Length: 341
Image 1 (cartoon, rainbow, N blue to C red):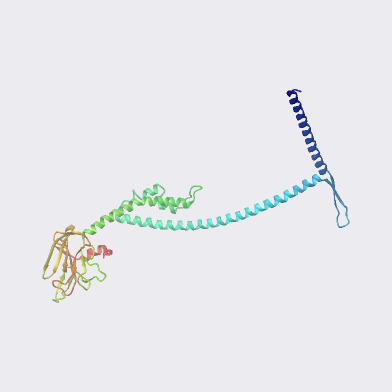
Image 2: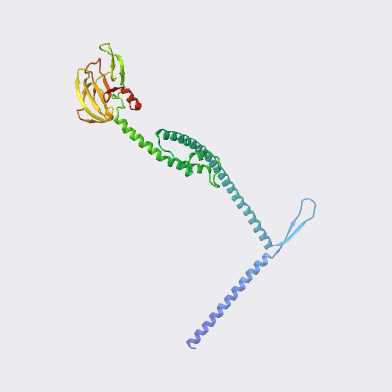
């Protein structure tokens, strides 16, 4: 027998074995499902016998229907517990959200109260600013009126007009307030510039106390009085400042140039400073002078110390203010800026 014949024989036997095996497998599967179907198709009779005298109920079914019914019942019961758990969880979440909503509403009410307080404060601010601008002579037409052109005028904040749909009134009010405050920046800057220029003016005129000490006080005022030594009436041409001791510093009351540093029998050691606008100041009875003639000094700069030189009854500073050839009451200039004492 040739080799090719043997191969064909082996191939034929292999195909036959595969066909026989597949046939047996299919028959086994068919027998298995047939047996299962036979079991499930077995008839069952369920009898319901009441305790009391009555008719007996018979219910005929098969195993398949019984198992299917049991599966359906289990599915229904499981679904009930599952959805019941989900509903319980949803109820807890709803309760939590409701609680958060109540807290949010309470916070919103508090915010509205604070917003109302802010608007009332803004209204007072608007009134005060308008009065200040009027007193300072600053034109308000080109500044504050811009806010009303952009719905920023505070008068709009206290109207009764309804806001656009979907917009909270508080948000609209805050936007209007922000617009008004933005427009108020420029006049406030103008006030600052004016105060700065006035502050420069105050440093050029004698507007502060020449002695800054907790014990400093005016021991003799300007004007007619009795001379403490001669006992005669005379015109006191300045203010006497005392701290009850010598050596305390004396300050220049304005920017200026020292024109005299000298001594005489009446004033003792004294200094005269020339200021702008034709104003001169004299500081007499000094213990020491710490400036020289021709020196430029700044307001609050130390120019000497309190002493007891010249005609005095004790250590003090005699302070005079001259405008041209006239002697004026220094208190009038000191009172210009009372906070600078």
